Length: 325
Image (cartoon, rainbow, N blue to C red):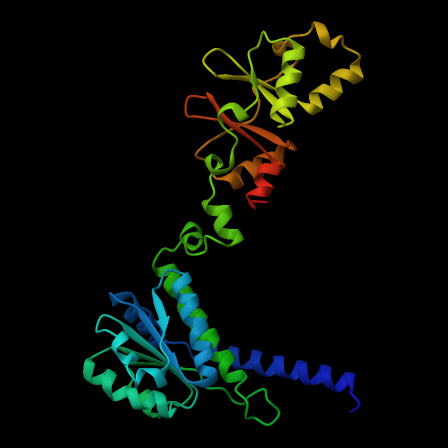
């Protein structure tokens, strides 16, 4: 079989053109029915129960996952399984979001009268505006497309793209209506990179206690070097008797002193420290420490409490191990 590269690329571009056109047409049809669907979801005390067969079912699972991760409790129920017991998972406090391009999927149509008798609110995403699903629904979101991207006009392609886009639009509108914020999203994704960035605080990753290098201002240069070498931070805090931060001395400061030819053995910590160093509160987000370190081109930072007393320290390696950067 000989592949024609130009033909392949053209077919791919045609597919994207057809699906893009379907979405633009979908955009033009949005009206008060979409607003009513959002209001229905906001009013229910339970969950959005998403259901659909075949490819629409696959889309439904993704929509349910998107809703759940953006502040709208949701789950997917397979319509075939619903007829054999799973219908009991749907309560009066829920709202059903049923997806079907034709609106006539046998397994889905079979449970519609039961949902209607129970009084469960029903939102339909369908291209069949005169279908059984549309007739049973309280709100119909029109997902019809002029044609599928499939050259045979058979395989669900543009129609499933339209369904997915409507589901995303619904999730985003609900997200905004609920006042959903980045930290809310992070709590739903604690294992992801965003979750780590928005949920990890400096206190969670900093070195504390004896692991924090510190010396008094009168400490000799030799004591300062021993403290830095022993603690392995690449820096040491200089603090007073009450642990208030006076300054910091880093590996970079050491290199600069050596270049200037100073007699290091005669120096004390307060003579070589960098006064009023950058510090960060222990209750700050770890990502704030990253931003501060990047902005000022430093690799270590001291952590202080509300009174400015030294309580920890961290460097870029600590943040990398915590996968904040």
